[in-house]
Image 1: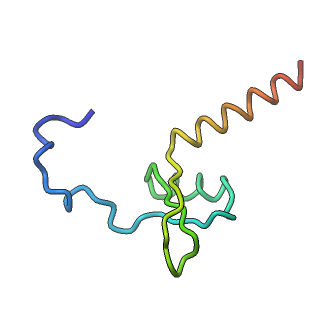
Image 2 (image 1 turned 120 degrees about the vertical axis):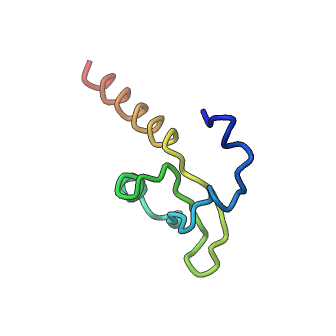
Length: 79
């Protein structure tokens, strides 16, 4: 949780200056590598690198959910 002493900070002090971006055809491994390398917990998915039209966001929790789904399927397959 964010301490209440930080709630009045101007937005410019907490924004991501250079957001991580990928295109829809990039794979989940690319997103994970970017997030780990930079320490960021979100990757923005844009229609293409020129227009940068936002089409979605991959959050760290999304990655965890997908990996858990994969692990669960693998466990069921090995039973």
